[in-house]
Image (cartoon, rainbow, N blue to C red; front, side, top):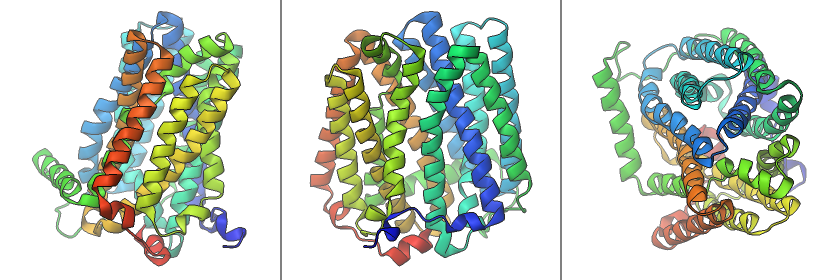
Length: 421
């Protein structure tokens, strides 16, 4: 394998609509990560409780699972561009409300979680439709590269967002973070507004569907996930890595323990995870071209759990950040491989609904995991919560690897990956 073939493919950026979408999404995701960090800081400042910081997960997971699954069916029946425009506009309005409450001196923790719930609901409406844009805009041979770029965009936002949020919050308060997020939605709105009409090509579904039809479609998609052994196993790996081991709600307490609670270092925890992820994305060709997504996913998920357990066990703050970076790299290997596996074995008729399920699990799982981490830390300690979560992930993924042989032996050719979208 040549050095160049190991690097991420940037050819999709030659397509103007995709380039605008990528830039708009990058800016919006950066603002969203700053808001997520600011909410954690505001709750921790007001309550000093890991249970409250972990409760952010509940405010996220309900709309992500319930609304997101129904939105997958909705996106298969209507103009996806208009859906995303409306959803992004709603997110902008809620973001402005976050600015207003911060400037007014803050609101009750429960009320803050309501705003988080509303913003997540709006994002969940547009999420499945937005996920289809890459495959709709790019030629089949560039779709895999487009998804890799979108993944890198997210990782860059996760890397820079919390660090910038720490600096902005330390200078202008959390209101500054919320304001950046509000402005960032304008760029995303412009990029989506410039897109052409992007209606689904489903021929078996009427344009107008009832809620009952949407529920039926969502359930049908979940049945497919449950009965397909490889897809089901991929979802279990995702849930094990997130619900059992996600450490983000522990970062405020770990920052207090290992860096004396400085707001400037708080953002480094999430930045370390994202930094490792970006490093893995930059050299993603080293594992995406292997053609063994199942085995690669398993190795990445096991390493994720091991490195998180070590990060929780060490007492040095800088050593914690190092192992978090290694965990972030492992997570990216697992996530990219899992996406490749699911997309290539799922027939086109189910991809929209399976994508909605992926979004619900991929976003809802971490929120449940953050809630778990906060509760366990409240009952024991942040160290115990992080170590036990990492080890639990290793046990579950290891058991799955021994029971599902086809997961270890599955192969996907580079051509299939590129055309699978």
